[in-house]
Image (tube, rainbow, N blue to C red; front, side):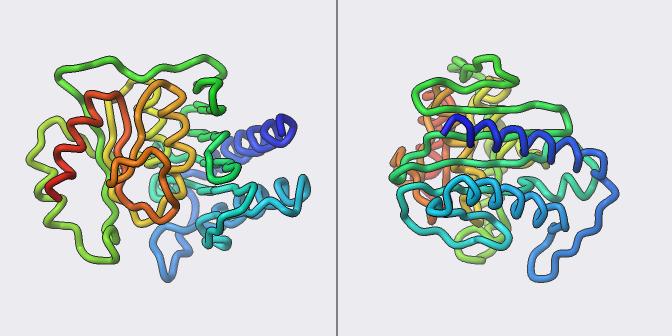
Length: 253
């Protein structure tokens, strides 16, 4: 499997560096959804080709053309461009996100942010890395800095404005325009202490969850399970102090 992982990493970096040159000068072709580019399709198809050439029995699940999931021995979950909006607008922090599951357990993850050339990788039981250097979660107990992300289609296409207003009152919660996959990585390397995500899907969470855990953090769903599922839509990650605080907030939502 090492050969395949290296191929995936190489493709993510080459594709990321290629699209970085186009950032801010690409057309949004989304019709039924906002923020979609031809590069989303190109990267998704390229990753699928690499994986299927290695072993056709591996199941491939990705956001654009392969957005159905099934339980299988080997499953790959891909977000070809996490943060397509940032890519289209020409701002920093979008990424290519890939995760490999064996028997439902996430064993490998890569997130590449070409805007700043940061490559995050994680291997089950072997740690998480930024540009091949080991990273660790923060140890902050006080003055926590916690990111939050919410999708306008979270919770079954019901507007989450009420939830957003409730979250906004917490001064330790910060929101930005970054890719959620990249934000998970920023938590993993200690730039933030935690993250709360209310999502429309779970493509970037598969990679992000392993990177946070292998950096020494916690990553759970709304039911506090560490074994997240593809149909989960609420996620909490970070150091134990941040996740504990988030659990108390979500308990009442």
